[in-house]
Each structure stands twice: as structure tokens, then as C-alpha cells.
Length: 469
Image (tube, rainbow, N blue to C red; front, side):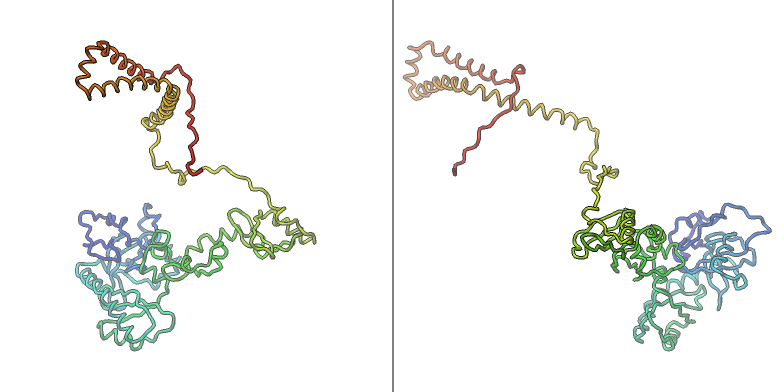
């Protein structure tokens, strides 16, 4: 038998070996099985047998719930699929709440115990098969119902369709701005679907609760998860919270103002009770000033002159109260420029490090430290080498002149091989001269090595010549 813990009461899911006497283990993890559910904080308390509560809460498709009486003392738990009394026939639902908390919920919703219907039995296999077949037809029936309403030219929208457990009745949930004439519509529906028709009008907020979705905050809609009562929300709520009247940002998926605007309204009203009125004007020596903006969190008010409303001046509410009291005595206050106090700068600490460029890099690496330590030494060595090169320029010139002489002699000897042989006979001392030149070149390379005893000087570059001057 199915536990019914799938979404919208779908009984196709089977617990198998996971089903126990305490219910299905997947009930706690199923998403819509706990849609608009109540937290049972009395579940761990064992009630005495004579004071046992016979009422249970049964959930049907989406957010529809009702209370039933267990007259046959059937062992029920959360997730049990039951067959309950209905008019006409019977309906199939899933138990969503048991125990003493059911009486508290009945009292909260003002549900009288006299009108409570009874539970017939646990749903058998035949009941589940009829229930599943009826649920599979709902989507096609909704599309066909919308076509019929559009053909009749009715200004309404079919939001959802719900079949009864025994498929003897179908309920159409619709939204409309004005009153709708259903006389011809119900005839066409009865002829097309061959069952009893029930029409129920719902509001736009209830429509969003049935359909569900994700809000701008990134979470599921409050109306489809836990919010059961829909209070009216007007534009004054946004004005109290200093929000811009932008319908695209303040409206939810239902097209109305968001319900969450009421959540923090009381806190804003308590904070604004200490503020002077937003229509306050100040009489200064330079002219009259009016209030432009209020900041509830900083407890400040911005004022500007009537003649020059571009320059704004912010003041604490304590100072504004003193200025208002001074105006009531008939005295004019100083100009706003002189009343403006210098702002004290606070050292802000970025705990999240959002503005730090290196926040993604791993700190404390040994290799990076060694590299950073070696960088200035390499620069110093390059500077020292450059300085020594500049100091050794005259020596290099002399050595280059000396080294050029044997090169010229070698070129002439290569051009005239006969002369080369003659010169070798006549000048037997040429080889030792070449060895001396090579030794001098080696000594010049040795002089180029940095000397640690020498002082370190910064390299100075001569100014560049401008060819266009």
C-alpha cells in the first residue's frame, strides 16, 4: 500500500520496506507533502489512553485541508492514506496531523466539532487506483475547461482542477476581477466531462499559493509553504519603510504587493515614533528649510532650503528636536551650513574581505616568501653591476684598442699567406704577444665580477636628447 507522501497526494510512490508503524521515513523529506504543514511539537509526548484525541487532520490536493473524526479507532499516523466521508460519495486524502495538537488547530480555525465528518477506513487498492486515474486526467481537463471558457467569452482564469477521490465530482478553482455568469458554462462542463461540477472563486494570493514558485528572495513562496492568512498590504507600508514605490519590485508573483512587507512594519513604526514629522520645516536666518529624507537606521534627517533644494544637510534627530523647540519660541536658528557638524570617520574592518583582491589566494606559502625576499637582492646586484660597468669604461676602451691591433695583423696575414710565413720567420715573438692579449681579456672579465667591499650607488642615467629641439 502506498504511503501517499509524494507531492499533491500522489500515491504512485511506494515505501516498500521503509514503511513502519510510525509512518513513512520519506515523509520528512518529501517536499510538498508538508506544504502548509503544522509542526507537531507534541509528537514525543505519550497521551494517556482515556484522553486520546479522536480527531485528525487530512490533507488533499495542494493546500486544502479538513478535520475528520476517527470513529472506528483506526491506528493512524502521519502519511496514512484514508477514505473519508464526502458529499456525494467519498474522498481520499493523506493524514497530515494527529494527536492533541489537532484540537488546538480546530480552535484556531474556528472549526466546530459538530460539523466534523468521519473516516471510513484505510484506503484499499481499489480506492487508490480510482484516485490515481482521476489525478491523471486533471491536467487535460484544465486545458479543455480553459478553451470552453474562452469560447464563451468569459473574463476568468481556470487556475486549478481537483477531482474527488471517487471521481464523482470535479472542482474548478478560478480567478476573476468581476462577477461571472456560469449558467451556460456549467452546462458545457457537465456535457464535456460527464460528472458533477463545482466552481470556487479564489483570490490572486490563493492562486499563487496553489501554483507555488520561487520568490525574489530565492526561497519558496511564503503563501505556499507556511502562510495561511492573507492580510491586506497597501502602499503606506512601503512608505513607512522608506521604499521606492516601484510596482515591479514591490509586487510578488500574484501581482499584488508582497506579503513580506508586513513582517517588519511594527519595528519601523516603533522607530519612527521617536522621529519628528516628515513635514517639519525649520526657520533659519538664511531661509526656510524642509525635510527631504529620513534614515531610520542612522536616525538622521536631511534638510534643504526652499530656494536651493540641491544641497542637502543631514542632522541627528536630537538636534532637529532642539531646532524645532527653538522655532516654537519664535527664534530663528543658524544657517544649515553652520549647524552641520564634522563627520567622525570610523575605521571600518572588512570581515568578509569582499574588497580584498587577494582573498582567493592561499596565504602563508613558503615559496612566495622566498621569492619576495630574493627580489630586492637581485635588483641590488643588477645596480652594482651597472655601477661597476660605468666605472670601468676608460679601462675597457684602452683594452679594446690594444686588442684591436693583433686583429688587424691577423686580417692582413690571412689575406697574404706568403707574408704570414715571412712574418713568422722574422717575428718569432708574435705568439707570446697573442697570449698576453688573451690573458688581458681574461683579467677584464674577472674585473667585471661584483666586489662586495665596494659601496653601493644608484645608477644615474643621462637625460635623453630631444631630436625635435
